[in-house]
Length: 127
Image 1: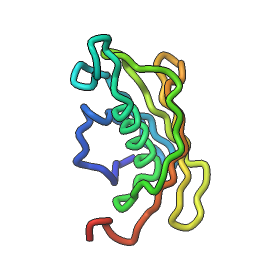
Image 2 (image 1 turned 45 degrees about the vertical axis):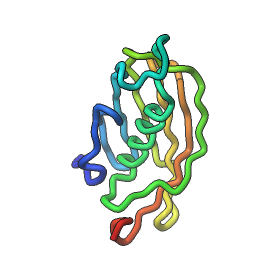
Image 3 (image 1 turned 60 degrees about the vertical axis):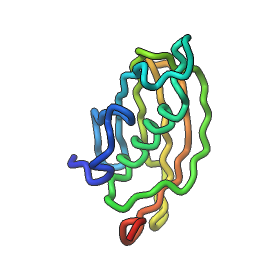
């Protein structure tokens, strides 16, 4: 499926799509030293959230999709050098509102889960 949203995103920072289909996506990210917050190699949670958010946006896959809110849980720490994968699935649609469930895991171990409320606008949010 052709990607219709977030076309200029830096995939190094937010992940690389490995599967995009209607209402679902899978995004992969290899963490690196630019994401760590200390000398033990802890990856800042913002990168994990960014990966999950990007997966949610691709599950909706509309040029005018925006994030309205997110209810998330960080389940396990992520370290530099780990490969993590976000899997997103739309669980409900009501008009412009899409609810997307996202799980991020490493080696089938969940490290993050969340429910993202996304909205499809009539035009770009900045116009």
